[in-house]
Length: 402
Image (cartoon, rainbow, N blue to C red; front, side, top):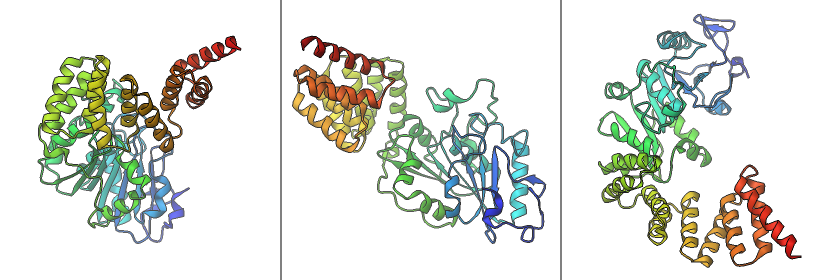
């Protein structure tokens, strides 16, 4: 697909010449400008991690967005700290090139959109380009412990803007942030800026780092983007949560999660208890509490927290599986089997449920059913060595008994 498929022509943009506009290339491995005749909006879409050269997030939806569109990606996961190579050797050159492209189109309003790493870029570029921003699941400060940026930004990358808080406090254009309440880093970052009057934050009760995906799968993403770019009220969100209304909660949730990752369970439990005191119906904190208690061998107490997590988020498979596992660990085999069967009705490819069912049928000496579920677990997750060993061992036992 090239830029002329959107109907651009040198007659409509006098500065357009061949493959450049205002002296700036229209296309590279890291950017692609699509012109839309008559549009006055200039939309910048910044890709998340994992995009290949010449590929961009939301590219397939170009025809549904009737605006000038500049797609961006970066060759390494640097959270847009070094600009975009196809447009400049550093951030300032990149911004200057984008300004020339905006001038060349005659657009009078600029908008930036991105998710995850692209969301950080959208907030950063939005400030520099005087744009309105729609950011899905952004970090606000880079390199927080166990954050995605801390794991994925190469060590030799200079963090030119490691903290967005001052820029967001000075924002003059609308900034909309959609983020998931079940992601401790994302929620903690949202809490950092929740008091800024010019920042509009919506948290999704049942989401982790997947808010944009949720909107896409429910066919709400493009209507949301169009409302944003056309300066219309954004659609209401039925999954809207209220975790940010409990000031102490995001901080204790994030701290507890850090200690949990480090297997410092006693300190993690203290932080999670503080989080639950602030926000008792937190599905995710109840989930982590259950896992701590399971690691400690307190399955009955773990089951109570797992039940609360499932009650709050019945459509979240990880919570459903943990509750079924707790039932099994407390001897409630029939209940555990039923829960796993219900999981498989909704998620037929849930290899963990197949494996747990195999374990329970094996304990009940229902060898054919056990073998069926172990085989399905191996088919769904062929690289899981424990699944393969269990199936092999069962096969050997059944062969020996014949």
